[in-house]
Image (cartoon, rainbow, N blue to C red; front, side, top):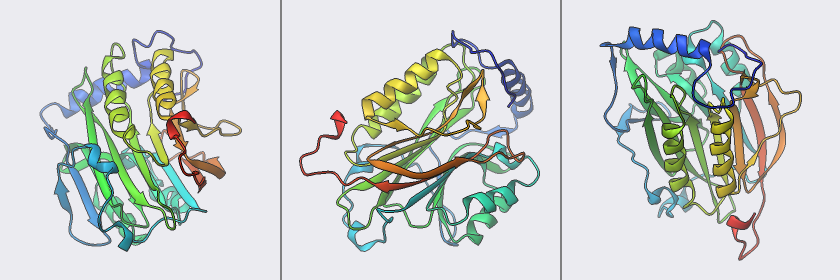
Length: 309
């Protein structure tokens, strides 16, 4: 991803460098890539064989789970998060940067994650639970959005939206986690936003589908990933989602995030949580700089209406 300094205000076209790259990829992918017709959630539980499910998102993602009380939860005083578009692990030293920067994090969100042996070994080495919503398979390797965590989620589901020009999907993965000594659960959503389009129709549809699911959850939320909001019109769509869900954007000092047309496209949005520490980590192992943050839970008072925050 190349940096640009002029804001793309009409929202009609992606950055030229990105468009050239995607056209090249489309030519390479033609006839070689397998695209699932529906969500394909791939899950592993600390060394167990991979399992697969469609994992369609419904309101049940926010429904109480009967076995939840028996499972371990996140600490309400310390929920650490690592977010990174890892550029399919194509650059050198991605594994070094990943292990160094994601070490001991409670929740790891990856976009453009290739489910190859190297990444699976790294996740296994860290003794993590993980699942991936596959966007496509190329040369036998599935790629999509992945969420890994120290504790097992009590529910998971996925969304997908097809890029209107190149026909490759972008995916979203949503996990639900128990918080220790709290009546509230945490909903964590990992998004890779629609990128290549001649307008904002598909982008709006992707965000509408996400809103439809997150809006059913009354507790704390983390929504993070590569939003691809490289135009004013796209940023308006993202901002409207934030307003509808009462989300706040993590404000980062010294702005080292990757930008398109001068604006950052990687974001961590949150609700019902307070940032304690955070940072952006410049790397050469991807075209995106990863972000880390540690939250603490803000206890809600009885009768609090989260929609009025």
